[in-house]
Length: 74
Image 1 (cartoon, rainbow, N blue to C red):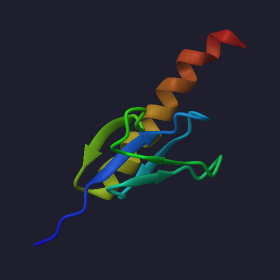
Image 2 (image 1 turned 180 degrees about the horizontal axis):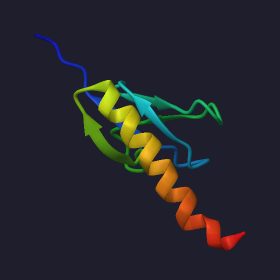
Image 3 (image 1 turned 180 degrees about the vertical axis):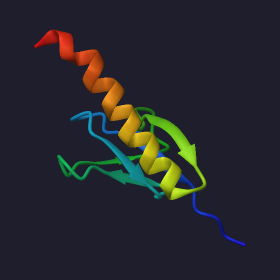
Image 4 (image 1 turned 120 degrees about the vertical axis):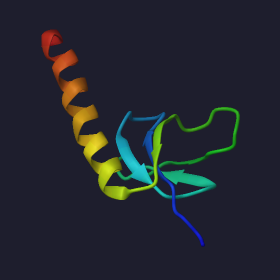
């Protein structure tokens, strides 16, 4: 049986956090740049999940925590 792994990744160019099921390459939805997962300057994978719903919930919580930590710099 084939199981997808859902990776929560952060784009090394613009910092966007997004979900990816790709095994080899990562393409950012915001800046449209592509990076290979296995390269030396790889895409930072924050966490991996088996369930897409858990991955999506993690992204929402991660963005909320990031926004709160950056709130004092405005």
